[in-house]
Amino acid sequence: MKNLILILNAGSSSLKFSVFSLDSGADLGVFLKGQIEGIGTEPRFIVKDSDGATIAEEHWSAAEVSNQADSLERLAGWLRTNRPGYPLAAVGHRVVHGGPDFASPAVVNDEVMAKLESFVPLAPLHQPHNLAAIRAVTRYNPRLPQVACFDTSFHRTQPKVAELFGLPYEYYDKGIRRYGFHGLSYEYISKRLKTISPRIASGRAVVAHLGSGASMCAMKDGRSVATTMGFTAVGGLPMGTRCGNLDPGVIIYLVRERGFSIDKVEDLLYKRSGLLGLSGVSNDMRRLLSSTDPRAAEAVDYFIYRVACELGSLVSAMGGLDALVFTAGIGENSSEIRSRICARSAWLGIHIDEVANKSNKLCITKPDSPVSVWVVPTNEEYVIARHTMEALGLDKTQ
Image (tube, rainbow, N blue to C red; front, top):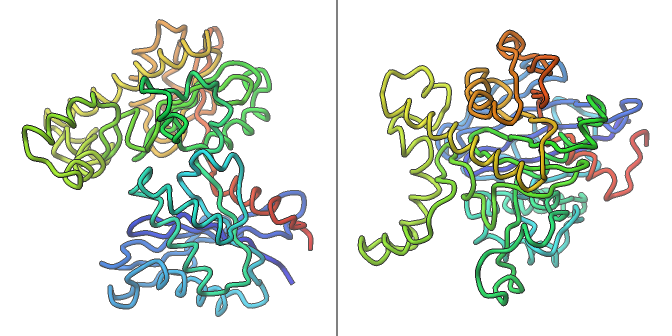
């Protein structure tokens, strides 16, 4: 009998999942992966095998799948029917915010859940849905062990000066500090670099996690020393719908002079800004690049400008740069965005090889480039599976 680990990444209208086998030889192997999207509107369920081939696709009504609990029940039912003899040994969850309390994955219990609930205001777009998935699993099977893995944990190695804001110190003690996010992705890239290039892994690298959510991380010897996101996941780079860095005086002005409520400010910064807000066209980089609308081009220009500016800041934090690594949806797939960022950053010693870049090669710089540039696909689900296995003391071959 084979045992499986289920990995869940829950959003407001989607449930992404991966299933790993504990009986796959020397390492964890992907057994299945897929998602339920359109929860509460037009639910669609799709499952792919380890080779990426679609093996199941179903559509339901909004009434049948209206929340995370419904989604999990459908997923569990499909696994019972289509993969009998493959029981779940554990469930691992991506949880965006671990606050000041969690520097490593945590086995879920009532105390842990209470602390995670207190961090909801720090990640209002993500945390409630992450926790809803945990509660759904508990209702489904209270005895099934669960592990929460945090996007903030990887950045706990940053020096204190990188965590501070210019506020009275008492607020730092109360938890108002720079946490950083996308840590599960950065952790994977950090480990992957040890295989790709031990020299780069032990040196100074900036990893650009560029997707609908975007951030960058400066790594020295594989550890986070600075990152673009801060107290919440709305800061740093402009994103699909999130604004990125913003003069806090803008918020004061909107509230005082324009009559914005806190809820309206939150909606503006998280859901109506970034690439979508600037372009008025889309939050999808692919659509912006193909659009003839001048505002779409301007939104792309702003994104590239901010990435290049933040790259310079992160290089300063490390005192130099040996490598730049692109990952996530835009970073892995858009050769045009990579090319334009590298062109703006040529002063750092980046000599890009456009043929390699357009071919999505692993290394996309010329042999004589003082700073090398890499394209490395991320795998957050694998990191969560490893942490889940280790936290629970699971043997891969049990």
